[in-house]
Image (cartoon, rainbow, N blue to C red; front, side, top):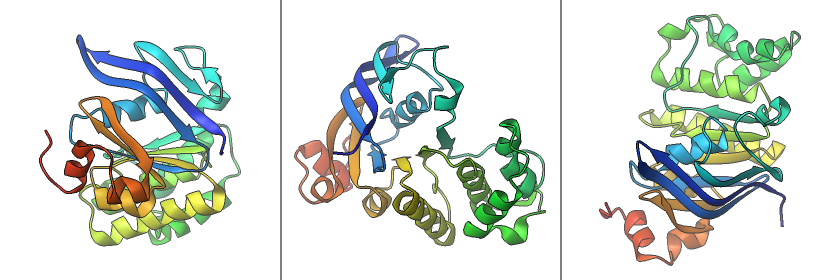
Length: 242
């Protein structure tokens, strides 16, 4: 069994008095690709924000590498192991190069030119090195956001709908890079997606969230081919369950 990176135990998150996430138990293993699927408003993005330590449970335990995570107590070195690419990337009003190198400079790394060049080439962005971010297409901007994350060499990569509304060309590039990153470097990937086909292509395990609670967690094959819960089957088959 692989090392457990995250453990969630009786985790609850509330906004304005309403419980939006209630996870009794969830383990995330080092080196896996875990997809989180579910309808809009199911709590997927809230769960991702907890995993990136942007927010914290109102009660319950969020554990990373055996440490219970609480506001103000997490070492910076651990926090920097986790990087997120959001659905709508917030790029600097600057060149592609400056956007990608930014995180390295924040961390005091001044000799990262070779790493930046490599990740730009990997994502098909080398020709856009000196382009302004404001001139990029949606797919190009999303690839720049992914490059900015990859150059930091994260232990955990969190992806929030990374290919929503992108054309098939950009979807293919991003999916291939994510798969290669996991397979060749062992990066743990947690992917929030509404696209069950994408989850099936990329994930080893899948979590189905509905109304803030986990309905089912299973390996990708059984999840899609023989789900245990009828609500999971309805979601996978494209039926309305909400």
